[in-house]
Image 1 (cartoon, rainbow, N blue to C red):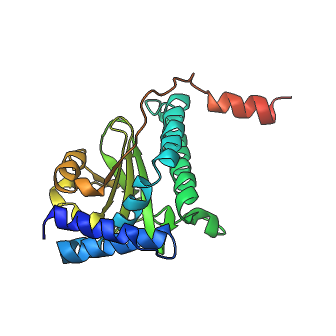
Image 2 (image 1 turned 60 degrees about the vertical axis):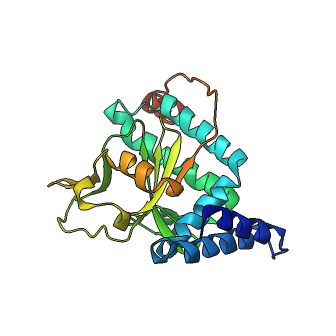
Length: 231
């Protein structure tokens, strides 16, 4: 079946009065997965999320404005900012997806510690969120106290800031040659961005932002001290 046939089916579904917009999107994605084969069907939850994002560009524009602001306030070129910048940008993505569809931060569901690998849950599927300014290696997990980690069948939402893209994929889609396993961590090599752009472009969301503001850097530890500690 051709892409034109798929578009005709989608148009027909859009004319059907389903319960709500989210049901309609799910139905469209399910039809696409059946037409395009089992591989796409396996990752229907990823395509469903992408359809939701593409239908809510106005909300996602606001999300990227925040990510851009975070990049300026806490530039990751400084080691002291790396964790703050990554975590705050992750929270921004969770917050804006939650404006579109229920998205829960997993760490808030724990009494102590943090969730292993994953950061949020959307429609019963867990996702690990990663932030990359310009497409370097992506640390999937730091090994800390154990050496054996399983990174099979993990859903990722990876924000490439300079490309203005969200890469939404499953770890099983990535060939072994793009994975790097060292004594300290497991990571994806920077080449996965080019690989996903070429082979899984329909799993990539592009932010529609044009002109973005420039902000002055925040010295977070000075702020914490002067605001909460200094007498």
